[in-house]
Amino acid sequence: MQLKFRMIARWLIVLMPICLATAIADSAKLDTIRLPDGFKIEVYVDGVENARQMALGDQGTLFVGSRGAGKVHAITDSNGDGRHDLVQVVASGLNMPSGLTFHNGSLYVAAINQIWQYADIESNLDEIAEPIVVYDDLPDDQHHGWKFIDFGPNGELYIPIGAPCNVCDESGYALIKRVNLDTGESTVVAQGVRNSVGFAFHPISGDLYFTDNGRDWMGDDSPDCELNHVSEEGQHFGFPYVHQGDLLDPEFGKDANPDDYRSPLVRLGPHVAPLGMMFYQGDQFPATYQNNMIIAEHGSWNRSNKIGYRLRRVSLNKQGKPETTTFAEGWLQGEESWGRPVDVLEMPDGAILVSDDAGNRIYRISYTPN
Image 1 (cartoon, rainbow, N blue to C red):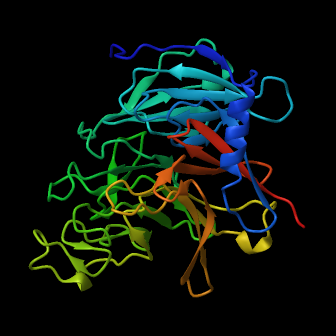
Image 2: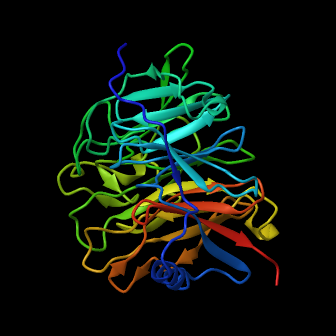
């Protein structure tokens, strides 16, 4: 197959001197972020255009996808101080490569209707080998076509396929499937999923948990976006018939019964746009954070008063019941936002990284006991 996209290897030194005014402005903005006691946020790396999903390579390379920029970034430690500081664009001209993941030495990139594999990519970031398409049985719609991808505990690739609309009933869409890349066989894991752009697997049970963005144009306060739990493969989560577990769609839900569908684990609020999520497994944060979920809320765009633009923490008690609190907020000041969290990634030292596609940067949140 002839490669449609030109590959560019271009080094951008991030740790170059910046003007004092910009540094002061960035510091002032970070001071508006509210975190629990003992936590600290800082700009980890700047100049990562349209930063979306993140993944860490076996040799420590931080890979970051984009959406509007159409690029894949590789970020490395240029001086051996343990901090990623050197941004390389390793691919460009891709079709909304929002999602990527690293698995068995290869980087996998989702570009709407194709999954690309960059084999052994960390061996030579200056001269990237030509990638191959490993899966292309996907729709080519751009509406909700950008993807968050990851490999599950079973070694198969999980791929959400968003609805190609605000609300519609189209076969082959609004689902999450898993794919065996060796055989090409796929299985629907969850259906009735309008637009999931983030998921994670429970560290103990291996169960899939995913975020879902609720439909638009039903008012400022409905429906809620969702955090969902797949307890059995093939479950239906309601879209387009039922939203937030109990709200019938005015067009498609007239004959629907909410009891026929899986209800959300957590109703996160209307139009908050939850995206990337993770289960915290490090030992830097307090022990009470162990196996808690951290969710990035990208923030509302179609609401009279904006909400979201924050990180939420969800813990599960022994009965599996969720408790939800705000972990980090302040990217939204009044009706003005200066950043939009997209994805969260745990680092080997137990700190977490947060990508911001509006600020073109990645933050680091760490904890030091008082």
